[in-house]
Amino acid sequence: MVLAVRDQLFQTHGREFARARQHRLLLDGLLAPTSSIPRDTAAAVGWAVSWLGPSQALAPPTGFTAPALGLTSWLTNLPVRKRHTSIKTWHEQVARWLAEDLASSLCMWAEVTGFMSTRGHYLLYGEAVHPMSLAIRRRVGTD
Image (tube, rainbow, N blue to C red; front, side, top):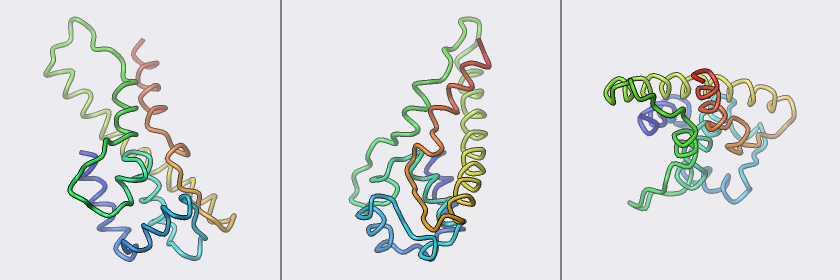
């Protein structure tokens, strides 16, 4: 689900963000002048770094898939399935939560990059919008 959303975001907002520029962003520590990347592309890149980690989001494809660090932290911080909830119902609930959190984190990244655009640089660390925080919110809401 995360990779499908990433592909859609990069197809829509990242077409002009060439592989060479992605490599440069990695070398520059995920810091880019706002004049070098359109704001919606920066939001898509920040989103991808949050959910996948910088290497999987930006490094050239090698055929090896690194762990999706943000997704992993999101999954490990979900609430525990209640005993009376069936596995099928639980999987459906987690899929709904994931879809909601993928969308809300993109909206959050749009706000973050909007703020950064007035500061002259995008700092695209995944921690700016951390998937783990979204999962913890789910856990707190079900206790």
